[in-house]
Image 1 (cartoon, chains in turn purple, brown):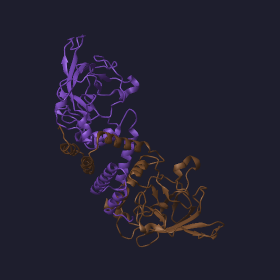
Image 2: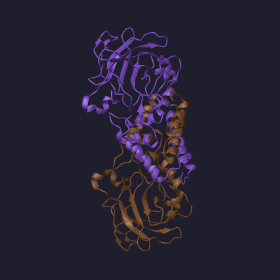
Image 3: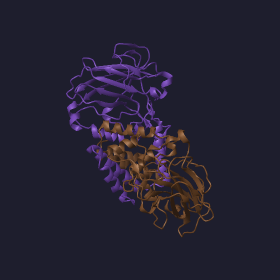
Image 4: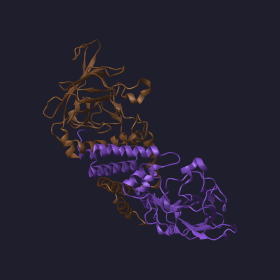
Amino acid sequence: MRNFDENTITDAVLERVSGAGDPRIKMISEALVRHLHAFLRETRPSQAEWEQGIAFLTRTGHMCDDKRQEFILLSDALGASMLVDAINNSAGLGETDSTVLGPFYVEGPAEFENGADISNGMDGMPIYVSGMVADLEGKPLAGALVDVWHADDHGYYDVQNFEERGLAGRARLRTDRQGRFSFWSIRPASYPIPHDGPVGDMLKAQGRHPYRPAHVHFMIEAEGKQKLVTHVFAAGDQYLDSDAVFGVKDSIIRPFDEHAPGLAPDGSKRDAPYATLTYDFRLLPAVRAACAD
Amino acid sequence: MRNFDENTITDAVLERVSGAGDPRIKMISEALVRHLHAFLRETRPSQAEWEQGIAFLTRTGHMCDDKRQEFILLSDALGASMLVDAINNSAGLGETDSTVLGPFYVEGPAEFENGADISNGMDGMPIYVSGMVADLEGKPLAGALVDVWHADDHGYYDVQNFEERGLAGRARLRTDRQGRFSFWSIRPASYPIPHDGPVGDMLKAQGRHPYRPAHVHFMIEAEGKQKLVTHVFAAGDQYLDSDAVFGVKDSIIRPFDEHAPGLAPDGSKRDAPYATLTYDFRLLPAVRAACAD
């Protein structure tokens, strides 16, 4: 096999990867080669453009560390993350809709009791977030793990200025016997995805803004149920229709209601204005997840 | 724009990138979104597989530094580099065939006089490499820049064990008034592309060997001519038909002839066996390159 031209090179590479031992790797490799080559034949990059592409991917890799994941951002900004989400999570059986994980999840968050303040002293309007985790029939699920994380009042996550304040607005809770969870934190703002790197350059070149509507992230796991990764978005946010990562669904928008000082839903007395958010989640049975794989 | 499903997400992203100011960036962005989404719809990755893909790209980026370019390796191993080469370099007017740049070119190589030994003391059989640079009519081109680089007797480039010996087997020459260049070095061996990283893992998973047939790299620039990036491969090499990066063309294979001790072509007396390689290059006029862009 030699002397390949623009057309024969694709068959040559396909023949080479056809020896993959694992049929799934063979299938993915073959599809990757076909679609990558089709992209190149359509766009016909010059050598200089190809080198720019290599440099873009290299910069994207170099931006990644334990606090930042630029390749997830890239996948998010190209709609690939939401497409993968749609492929895997669209049973339509009444389960809570999922959305992107995003680049800011941190493994093994600190555990908090229900009702605790997880803000670690962040400035902003206090918000009381509560809800229930249930199965498709609405039966409460006790002992479910509820991971939550969200941005601050200026739209930054703790890991974006970690040295300054450590982890904040990030917790693992466990639902009580009624399937309920709750916590205090501060109300998150809408924000730009990190745009000081190659993904930001791409958005700018594409004439796009980098903003996401305000939201709280949830990752929920319960025994015998499919893991749910989602957000709850703030109703009325100006970016609901132009989320930079295409993650908004009507079913996961709720008001972040503001209240005057007084008695909060958990019985505490607030001497300053505060907000509330509540959402009841419904999880698919895990058996369905296994079948879908 | 919200509530996207597996099919509507693609149009949503296409609409978003359609605002790119530069028409070339718009065209490339739209093609990228369509082909990337088509790849995902065909392969239907699970969330875990998508995370493996993100991790693969991240590892590939982290392998890149000033001595190693894992994304070029990835492009090479997927046949993308040779496809881009074919798109840009196939005038068929009698010019020397091009092939991949590869990941081992170092900017600004040291300049040597013709006839110099560029091996920097590497072990191996000495080789005398000579040739001519000419235009399409065979008229010699004086003062052309000839960058050369090649692997050692064990198949490693200088930059792969740089601390041990510095740069070696790497030089910039300039053709004389007859358009000729020449240098002594040591005969390069066939070798595996670096396979201790993600690209190596990919080749293994695809059931492929990582070897390339022995070759010497050339990058040649002359005033008014199109830059040529190519290799000259060793005739008879066992990997000519299975080059890991699909770079072999019959027109750029030449014998690396072995000779008994005695008088070498440059008039020097050799007291040990040595090899010779010669190749005459023909360059396209630069005007054609400008038109093709």
